Length: 244
Image (tube, rainbow, N blue to C red; front, side, top):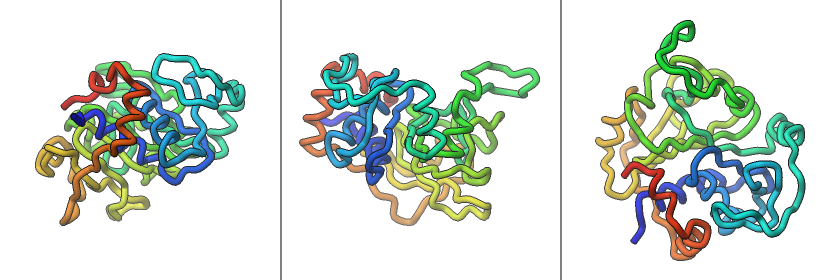
């Protein structure tokens, strides 16, 4: 039986469709890593994938296993070259995101006296300015989807982001295809996952979301994709990451 996590992995993998020979980087938990590997093994075979440290992988191993084929070494300086030259599509997380895709992973509350300290800026400014960027947010809620982020870590469409592709959550798929009356597009609902209503997504979003007249349902995995996912993640760690 297909789970919500399976649908989310496939939706994240779709973000890499058409990328060709660039580095597909999933950051964080198993869903984004599986998405990059699934895309490479199915509809986007030229994608470059890595072991999460410093090796470009010739094969696509299951989660937790070392690659058997190494295509190259990717030290940090070479990784930065890919970032600065737009040769990396990264799927990031966000503690807060607004309608233009500005994201916060730095702190919650006033910068001078925050309520909570988070990761810091990390590579979010450079990634969003130079590379295609997508987001995976496992818990879609008004605390994450906010009218204004407390600190801008990743750039949105109104601040010069290079190419914001899509946002995948445990409820839906969104993009930035709404004109929004600003220098860049604003967030638009693309599809809802099976069992989710449009009203559920609207209620879980803390800003006015563009909802087209006909919102479709996020596609479910094909039989081939399920076979690949079961090989890559036989323990189904992906289910533990997704809030159903």
